[in-house]
Image (cartoon, rainbow, N blue to C red; front, top):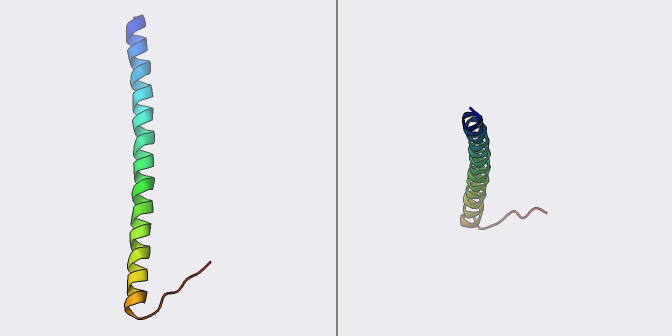
Length: 55
């Protein structure tokens, strides 16, 4: 019975960790997508002969 409780607890921990890993991967993917959008915008500006630099 003790082993079953330990297994259940470990399963909950593993599931929580996987959930956190998925959250991090999603945030990373969102950041990469934002960077790609910004690069595309800069490329469009450069092709038009200017670049808008904001600080």
